[in-house]
Length: 270
Image 1 (spheres, helix red, strand yellow):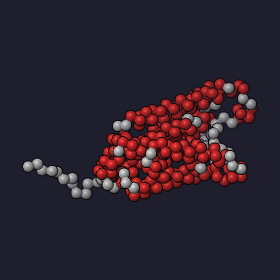
Image 2 (tube, rainbow, N blue to C red):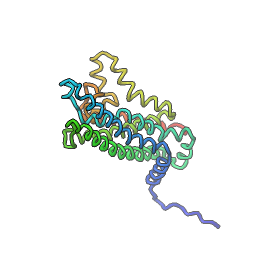
Image 3 (tube, rainbow, N blue to C red):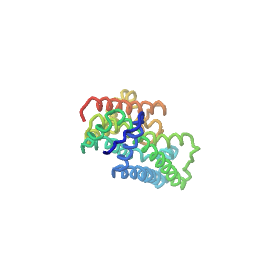
């Protein structure tokens, strides 16, 4: 007669769920491709923006030469890379709905909120780590290029460290916001569309409003509020919140999406 070994009493569930979500996350090919794109894109685009600036430096006016913004130029790749991170954040949850594996996941772990928290921790920690590596690499490569004209700076430059870490934090929150949207909508196309609309299209729509309205609304838009931590960039609007206040607003958007997604995950059928 075969004896079935019972798990020890009081065995913690969350570490097991965390381990399971990590295995699922790292075993998907799209994860590696997206993380590679993040690193290569941040370094490549930052280098491109820095090289483009010094290549036309001799033709710039005196005012344009004064507004160099060396830190933001080397980190400018985040604006496009956020799309890759956002898509990955959506796929973390919607890919399970599309394949039907979400049923197996929720059957194995009936505590649905625990599943979402585990996905959030695994995904958020991974993006943060990759974001820090790619941001520092983009900064150093960009400054090396700008140094050809004596425009490069070091990490001791005012706001440089905050901008580098801020870029990694911004990308992380973009991913978590997208994860929340994916949990809410459960469809890849719909969640990606919502993510693009919030981060890229909505600011353009607000820019069509009267300037008095723009000045009030724009600083509180998700992407604009998050960019406040990175600092002034060529793509940033004139009006920004203070760095940590803006980042707090951005985090609030992501938290709201995850909370609403968690509530719907619990209430709806898989």
